[in-house]
Structure formats: structure tokens, C-alpha cells
Length: 411
Ligand SMILES: Cc1ncc(COP(=O)(O)O)c(C=O)c1O
Image (cartoon, rainbow, N blue to C red; front, side):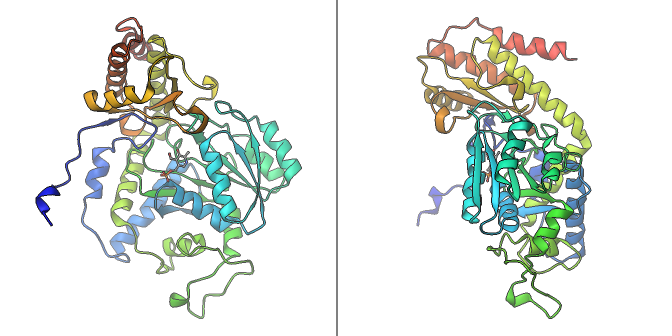
């Protein structure tokens, strides 16, 4: 083998302005390059406890079981769904984009009886629509997505906890793309489980998924207790309910791994944990409310710039996530060619779309480390040049001026 072909990793310089991943904050990268520790070293278990405390702050919760699942954001989703859903349980999923469909798909693999309600992509549900469906279906769980990056819409959740409580339904949301960029109040909104991801508003690389579980969710999971044979002792009693049909994602064992028992479940992804800890420190040092306000500021500046350029946006702007914008690809312009030139000549990545939006919509993110004025201005400037190159007519400089005016007006 000619090893000279395999040079040291040295990725090209890119500004990641798609719907995630984004460029990681250098502080997070530095934390991740720290030396490893043994799993049960008191220094390591202290870091784990700190991660739990820090993420309680990020999720705005008192939940004891606030921890990390090793794996990308869908690992957090799968861990919660596999641990909470018993085969044949009814679940209700309000679908308004690709990631609602992902919840359905994972729930089906848990052998749930999956019921859906749908609105067109670009819209969200009213609490009444969800309550009516709960009355009809009588699900054990309501599975929602807070910010569905595929449509850039943010489902209002604040009234759903009370509805779920009224009908005895467990309430979960996927906040992968919304946490720390949009308000999420785990306890005040009555959520029983939330999962998130690092590679969006949290400023980090993907690879761990922070989750939080309410006492009611813990109780449901504890009933399915089953400790793997090689580490089981006489003190470990099986629960009364069916076991969780995954070892890696068994939240019963994972709680005992993060808790005082320090059950020997998996080998911690230490570098990823160091990174996740730094992400939470960054957000809480900034202040969670400030972080959300900054995402709104830069998201709105991008919106003004895009409108100033004469482009149409996608979806109901009243329900737009702060951190991602859907932009309609103008008639006669090839969306992929624009993305290619943005990447090759300007080093800027913007996102394509899925399903019914493919070829029609670009998605531009302003989140995490890239929720910054310079990133917004560079992206608008490059997009204007590339679109002009492909024959789109716009007033030169109007986009930058509109964004700039927004920043100056918001001081
Ligand atoms: C809302 C939402 N849920 C889930 C996922 C899946 O995340 P991952 O690719 O990290 O597993 C994404 C990724 O973009 C997302 O935006």
C-alpha cells in the first residue's frame, strides 16, 4: 500500500451554513482533544455528573435523568422510543416534515401501533388539532418534533403538556435542531422526554445526543428493567414489564451507568463527552435566553437579506425556526449548480431539501458557532454573486443593505 496517498487529515476551509452540521466552536474542538481517562476514574465520573448538571440548565429541567446517549441525534430518539414504547402501544405522531416521518419509522420498528395526523409541509399544528387526535386515538405516547429542519417550521409545544396530562399521555419531543436556538422549557411545558443533538445550535460536532427524562418516564422505563447477563448480580431484579428490545439503547441500564451504581454498560465516548460538556458551558455562559435571542437576531437578518435580494421564502414565517430559513429556488435557476459554485468558489455550504421540496427549496442555517453577523453577510454576498452569474436579476448590494439595516436597527 502506498501510504503517501493517504495524507494527514487537513479538510478544506468551509463555512457551513446549511441546516447542520455547522462549524464547531474552537473551544469545543480543544476540549475534545484532551487526553482520555479511565471510565470509572473519579475525575471522569465527576465530569459525567457535571454534564448532567449542565444539561439540566440547557433543557430547563430538574429531571435527575439528564444525560448523554453516545451516537448521533437519532440515537437519542431511538433510546427514548425503544425504552418507552412496548410492542402494540399506540403512539400519535403529528407529521409536518421528514423528521415526523422518522419518528413514525422508528416507532414502527418498536412495533408500536402508529397513528398520524398531517399538515402540508410549511405549516404546523394547533393545540386543538392535536387534542382532537389524542381524544380519538387514545395513545400512550405523543411523539413530536419541535423544529423540523426539513421544512424549517417550529411546532409550538407550550400547551401540549397540559393536554397530555389531561389524557394520561406521555409527551416526547425531538429538539435536535431547535434546542438553545428556540425556547424549550422541559418542566414548565410538561415534557416527559426530550432528545437533542450537538451539531446545530449547541455549537459542536455530532456524535452524542443529550436527553432528559421526567420521573413519569423513568417509572415507565424502570418497569422494563433487565440487566445484561454478564454483569447481573443477585441484587438485580427484572422488572414486571416486557424487556427493552435493545441492549445499547436500554435506558434502564444507561440510567444506572450514569447513576451511583455505575453499571458497566458501554465504554464512554470520552472525547465526545468532553465536547458536549464544553457546548453546554458555552451556552450557559452566554445565557440560554441570550443564545436564543442571538439565533433570532441572525436568523431575522438573513431573512431580511434574502427578501432584500428579491427571493421568496418557504413556509409560514410566523412559525419559522430562528435558526434555519427555507428559500425558494427562483424559476429558471438550477439549485444544485448554485450550491456547487457557492462551495467551490466561496467555500460556503448551504443545504438542499428532501421529499416534496427537493429541487425547489434551499435551506440556510444561522446557528451555533455560525450564528454571527460576518457569516450572514458573507453568505448573502456570495449568494448574490452566484445568482447574478446565473442570470437572476437583483439590485446589487440590496441584500447586504437589508441585513445590515436589520442589525443596525436592532442595536
Ligand atoms: C429535527 C431532526 N431530528 C433528527 C435528526 C437526525 O439527526 P442525526 O443525523 O444527528 O442522527 C435531524 C438531523 O438533521 C434533525 O434535524
